[in-house]
Amino acid sequence: MDFDAVRTFVAVAEAGQFQETAAELSITQQAVSKRIAALERNLDVRLFTRTPRGAELTIDGQAFLPHARELLRAAERAAAAVRPGSRPLRVDVIASRLATSGLIRGFHQAHPEIDLDVMKLFDVETAVAALRSGAIDASFRAVAMPGRPLPEDIETVRVLDEPLQLLTGPAHTLASARSVTVAQLVGHRIWMPGITPGTEWAAYYDDLIAEFGLTIEATGPNLGADALLDTVADIPALATFIGEQTRLVWPASHGLRRIPVVGPTPVYPHSLLWHRDNLHPALAALRDHLAGTTASHDSPGTWTPSWVTRTSTTELRDEH
Image (cartoon, rainbow, N blue to C red; front, side):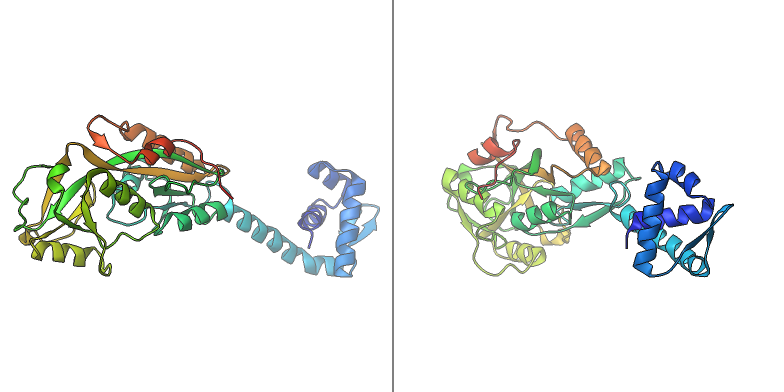
């Protein structure tokens, strides 16, 4: 059904004049007549009777009027549901305990008036597809993997370089260290069963291994953070990497140690991704907030893969 015709019908019914309705809608009287005639053909009824006083509703017109008004209200509700600014900002933070979740918590504290829907998507391809379809408005990611650039309609800006820390149990040989160098980690077993081949995390740690000769084991099933921490706490030979801002919910009695890694400090680069045509006003507020709260990147004494440094603040073209 033509909503312009329905809107014109309601306006004529309320004004009682075709000419007055034409002026109200900023169209010609002939256009008003054509819309009403088309609606009558569609419904196969007469809606108005012409009189010297103007246009009067027929019995069918009177019956249709309340439904026409409800149609227009429903159409407005439907449009409002997707109109930028009238719905929550949908943001993917990957996982609730990561630094990315902390970034969105800081944004919420600074802008409590903005409604948020927080999502948790696993891999970058899923996140990019959701951005392009409009299912989400923004996603926190490591920018891209080498040889797999982002589509040209996805924009990105690097927002946080998070230092890695070594996490050990109380009996690990490095547990008492105040900090460790990357060179000191050579030969130690660093267990990270959550690394899935083909993901952005795998690309990052592959480069870390190649650069410093570390031993990172991704064997065994990923049974979740609690199982990982339990294993690291109980087996002296194992350690794992964790982001400096990653939150742990774990009893202090287990004696887990968080140890800064230096010389250089590997940092994990988090970026914000969004679709270039997304006009949600809260998205601009999120970008402005992050620009004002995050530190500069590629600081002396830190390390990121060369492909991250090269691609993290530019628009990348789709290979396809």
